[in-house]
Image (cartoon, rainbow, N blue to C red):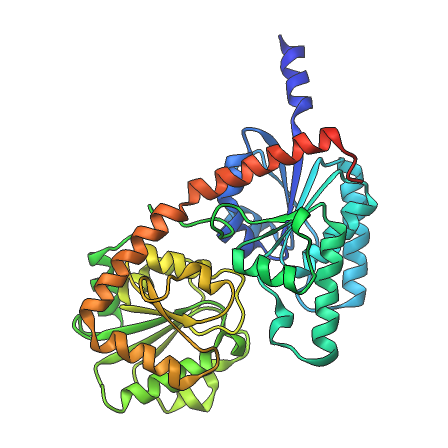
Length: 394
């Protein structure tokens, strides 16, 4: 009996998930990992300390390998990481290597190909080069093409992103797909839901009256996320309305809080990185994402699940997360006037906020539940395994 159990354990297929930083693992991959553990031997590769490894909340039988990835191009660090990945993949003989984010995609798909890993999968979650011009755009785009050429399969977290990448000839129709209706991990409706007590408490913390209107941005604070455009649009609204507020939550990667635009504004609150986004979503009335590039915009689903509508830019990725005119309003990317117009519509129509917020929650729960997306990824892996038995992908 022990020999039989040992043989079954030995037959379990091994999967390695690779992400640049541990926050990606915790925020997006943890639900998938929990679903995979009963069926696969799971290893996570990321750049993390022992404390960060414990904070990720991984199941006990999941292994973690720390490799010193850096986000920006760095030939020295990147070469070291590539060699270390090659050796690690070769030593462990994984059946599947699945990468997320551009840098880890470039390194791990290359290393997995060199190590002859049979199934290599990369998930595209947005393209940095969309907002670039000249040689930088071309070079970054070629990087994505190379990732796709080394992978056996490419996943995109939205249908519109897949269409864009097909048009740009980055990926191929035969080796790319989208799970269900999109999203990297779906939304957890048990965590994100309307909570009146939470709304009251957070507003009291900021001395915001319950009848006042609160706009919210939540994400990395970068110019290509539209933070400055949002600030300008909010400043215009303040010229006629004083009982409005703007919450900005997220890591300030470009020191935007110190920008002169915000120094002279009232009722704007920078709260930094948060591990409890649902609190600020419950405190808000309208969610704003005036980004210039997104793969999908998972944070929109979270806000929708809390029951608030969204004002967002009309770009690929976001158009999958928002049904324009039903769950939110879309504006021309980078256009402060159009952004202000959409914000004003919600500001002056509380009934419309409630109607669209309810529709947004219904759609998020029905079409993008965490369980359905994780099940879809598990089925995709099983399909890949069946294909691997028939063909040699190395």
